[in-house]
Structures are given as structure tokens and as C-alpha cells.
Length: 261
Image 1 (cartoon, one colour):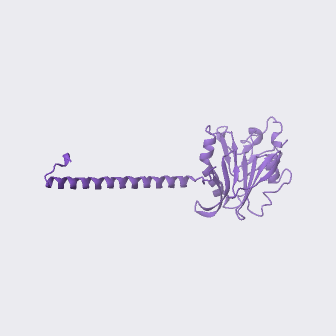
Image 2: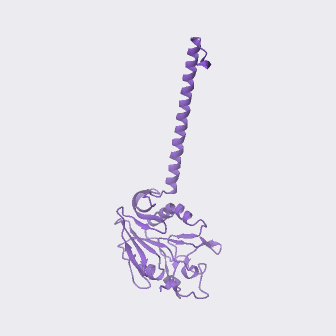
């Protein structure tokens, strides 16, 4: 039994009572745009999967998995990005300050960490403190993804009988997440002015899910193409009208009523 499955205690603190920051700085400037990119491309997917709008996406937001005193932060981890299905986005009429596992009772489907150093921190299985141990045994997230942009390496672990098993990528380097109906994998390109190796998302047909900006650009190009097509059709019709008028005039010169031809 994981700690997340332990019996619910009474009078435990809620997200309104617990610290909403661990005081640690974001480790590098890459983290925020990478998390924004994931949330950006997955928004249409999650809205389709949750027509009731009940899901929560967190980025560097604490997950309280174990109530500890006197310092509650020892029972908290803040993944770089995570997704929890079937919970309201807001709680107690406010934006969530954190995700409190004993308050919600629903574990994240996936948590992600972006490697900033050697990757040892993300793979640390020290009981109660190491990220790998906490995500596997404390929070018990269904998937734990470790993305090392420097090495262009994505490791996705699936929780099987209480232990993480590494999922092999397919021939394209992507790993399929069936509950989300998407595959995740490396992609090199530009996002928010940064050209880098990013973690991106594809659908079941292998189509790269576009960002909001890419969707807007595609819609703009389509509108421009439609405008050009309409202008070409208008020009073609105008040319045809002039041709018909010239033919009618020539027939009249020959004494032929064009309406009878």
C-alpha cells in the first residue's frame, strides 16, 4: 500500500493552510517555456477528454503527499509539470495553491521532471526524500517522465504493481500515453523565441499537436489561401464576362442576334 492510499485523517491541513512555495528558485530559464509548451499543446486534448472541465495541470506547484510536522514541506514535491484528471481546476473558490493528495484522493496521471544537472536528483530513490521514491511510492503517479534536454533523452516510467517500469520508446523516439491518447517525445524547433530541443506531443496518427500560435498561423494561412482562391475565381469570372461581351459585339457586327445563338 502506498502512502497515498493510507486512511484519511481528520483535521488535516488543506491547500489554503499549507505553504504554496518551497522557497527554491527555478533551476534554469528552460523550465517555464517547456512547461508552457506542454500546457499549450495539450489544452485541446484535455478539454476534449474532460468536457466537464475537471482536470488540473500544475507546473512547479507543490504536491503534498504526506502530512509532516513541524515542516510540512518535507512531505511535498513540486514536479516541473504534472496532470491530474477528474478534479476541479479551482478549489474553495480560489486558484489552487498546491495539490493536497489527502484532500483530493486522486493521484496524478503523470508527473514530469526536467534534468538540470546529472539526472541523479530526478532518479534519487532515497526513501521519503528522493524524487523517484516519492513519485513511485508516496504520490504513486501512474507515469513519471524524466526529460534530459542536454542528452535529448526521455525516460518514461509506468507504475506497475507499485513499482516503476521503464517504457521503451517507439521507432520515432516517442512514448505513448494511452490514457491521454498522445505520444510524447523530443522535437527541435522554436518556441517563444527559443530554438532548443523541446518535449512535444503527437496524436495517434503521428501528427504533431500544434501550439495556439501555430494553430492561429495555420488558420491565417488558410484564410489567405481562401481569399486568393476567391480573388482568382472572381478574376476568372470577369475574364469570361469580357470574352462573352466581345463575342456578342462581334456577332452583332455580323448581323447575328447573340441571344439566338
